[in-house]
Length: 472
Image 1 (spheres, rainbow, N blue to C red):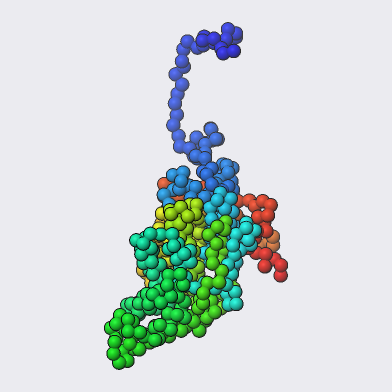
Image 2 (tube, rainbow, N blue to C red):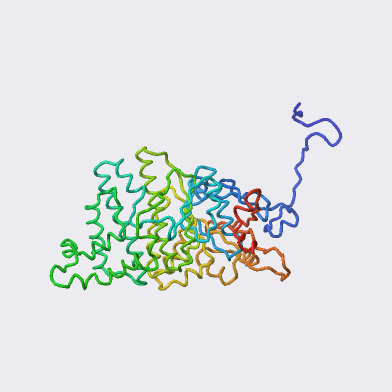
């Protein structure tokens, strides 16, 4: 029963006829919280995969770059993760991958170097491709699903896609040659390389991708078309023009990269798999050069797969999907040779239009600052600048000063993240203060969200990256 208009008729009841003149005070939240201790910021986002609790409010924090983009919380689905080794960067990314797959997003691990993600992807029913000598191979000139999609297109669309495939093949071959040579190839060599790939396309047809061995054979043969393109139709001038290129291609086939990239692809990527992990940990023992080459080929093949799936979805051949691509140990690929940053930049720049979130992981910005020239360093900093979401695990003050130049941090935020960078005790078994703690930043104006992540159930084993150490 609602009360009467004038209030209940009992002692101290009824309505007041006078409104007292109450004094009004103003204060900052830092001062007022002593009188009213429930001052807090807005609630953390509840869109996406639950990753932990806000260290200040205890509220559940959710994170998914694509879900945040759809909800209007960020302007692009790029995510950059920074943190010292052992602070749990890969653990956080694995939680994001698990949640993304549960929501129907296809996860693509573009070069698992340790491997950190292989067991998780296999557990979730995905496909694992293991690259190495005597194992699976990736043909750098294999367009994969992108080439196969030609059958479903009109004549004009096929011609447009052929040019796209050609561009990708030449770009990757140039990147691999740059890596082997440790310097950029010349303009004349680029022209010859492109002409050799075009000639092989005519000979083999669109459904049979050429290999690096095929390219080497054609360049050594020197047919008239190549000699014309090289402007060396007579005498020994052609041999002089292509001599360095021939040795570079031979190194790809017979040098330290032999047995990995010099044959057809043996385990094509499955477009229908819930997740895909390309395990390149086996090639790491052969040195950084082979590992960098594996990462470059994996990136090209993976992004080509996304392009193909997007194209087939537009034609109604397959259902549309969203993707999350993980590029862990980013620094190892970028430092291989001058100019490789430009190749990685061209691959990742248009992810938003493809419905793909990219997650880049590295230890610190100093990894990027160690690149060979200022042009590469500037483009590498652009990876962080273009990422709408920056996640900071434990980092020392000097590293936070570099981060602050790209992603502005408040003084309390810098103090908090630096407090996670090292334990305050030498006692064995002491828990590292930064383990499982992250600061999520989304722009200069928003305050960061400090998160504590906890594992449950099978995650303790699936996300553990230190099993090999503890077993010894």
